[in-house]
Image (cartoon, rainbow, N blue to C red; front, top):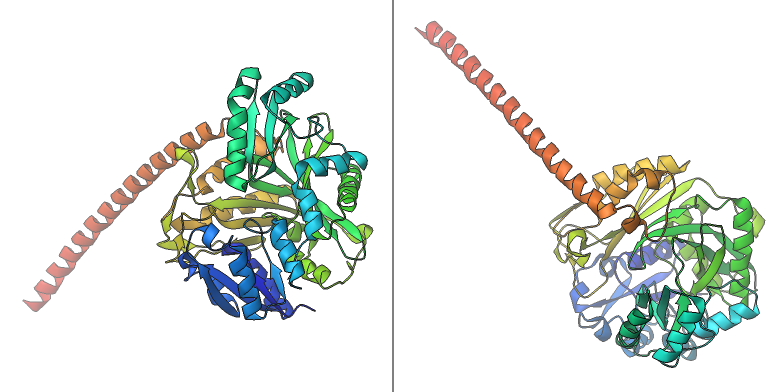
Length: 495
């Protein structure tokens, strides 16, 4: 049984893991870079160790240092969170060799899931519907052109090792393909240290829908419903919803079973996510399995009543999943907004620096996972995600209204945030009606609407300030008159 776990991560996900470990009696070991010495996860863990400089390559991506710290601390397990080493099969394999329990899938399974080409071949064999594209790695630009001409433009040039929207280029014709092929391979090499390209048909006006998977070491496999992640920018998710407005119980059963079959096909163990694209005609195409816990896991917890991090530990300990697929029922609706430190009007550029003040929203149906506190710093070294704001409601509208209130209550002074963007999105008729797609921002001119909303807010604030000034002026005049009259009365009595 796991007694002490090292959390190979930082920020809100490290805090999230610590919270569950405290609840189930597992000691926690935090690691931190020089940048993070004052972070909350360092203060809340049972013990903490410095692992190097601020740059990720010299700290949170330094496998040797983290393995050394695991052994030094006496931890018998490691939880990778998401990002950093969470999907690094070499790290998972090193843990296995050192008899350290890796909270996640096996290294072999992770290798297969991480190699899009090999995974694609396995899924084809298992008769999982996949996006049309190259049957194997593309050797050069000429071969990419040949495949693109066969399946039709637009197409995506995708790094086999890509993730998080990196190593992906959209091309609309042969000229753009020639211009972008080398750039795609170079981007992949810079981000992942290796490059191999495949060509896929770009499916327009799609919805991004994923299924939460859980599989134990006894080969019991379930899905824990779907999450809709269609509102994105540059292939990175912004807002997630569970359940999806376009998935009824029949579709949930059908696509959920495909997701389960995909997990079985790669012999997946622990928690993971099967991701799909859905076309307007209702067709689903499998994209990939993310071999880790997802950023958006809290909304699944809200509608299922489960602690998914606890499930990860239970499965790693060899326990069986204590329920069957038929036991699971969706309760209500949940929405998550990723609170990012970035400037929407500067092309979503990261915004960094000290947080002077912060107010975290709370109340019925509101959950906020964040590392923020007054005096902390948003570092330029790491991802812009500062927190995950989630709301739950008995129906979608209640969850939406609660999210609007929570966004209004979320006050962060010191950096630019994505909160204004979400306020605009949530009040659109398209969002209310569930008319979502991966090009939602562009398709509905959301940034233009945001600009108008901000101008309207400024005008309203000016009017409110003017009204307040007038009220204050009139009140001051009345006090002066009253004081003068009172003084006259006192003077007459003294005389």
